[in-house]
Length: 143
Image (cartoon, rainbow, N blue to C red; front, side):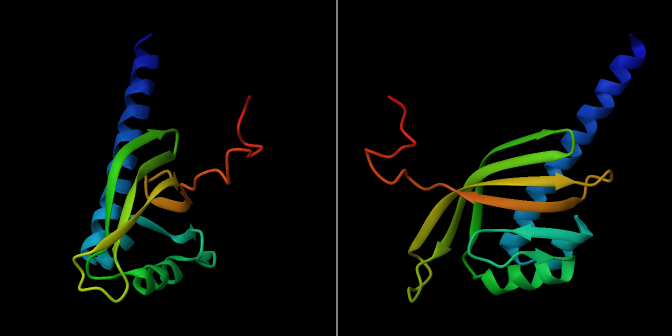
């Protein structure tokens, strides 16, 4: 029994550390700290976001983030769930309206599925954006 509790405690500690690392990656991206972001990722990082070519390797991912960065971009996380090497982060990404003065923003709801290494560093991130169903007669709707 004691061994099982120890194992469970270790798994909880690992999941908590992984979740904290993932939350910090958003913070580092939002403040433009690429070194801080890189410190929480594996060298063979994979970045799979809609509208952006698949990026493989930390350097390629950092370049992709730099290309998308704006002075007023930010992530607002609402939920973070971690279990067995996977963290799911739900939230909203906000960016300035193109051509605006930076005060007007638009946003999109997202879900990121992040896989972690044994050291709780980010190995991959795949993003999903919310989109409403095509219409009331959508085959996605159940009777």
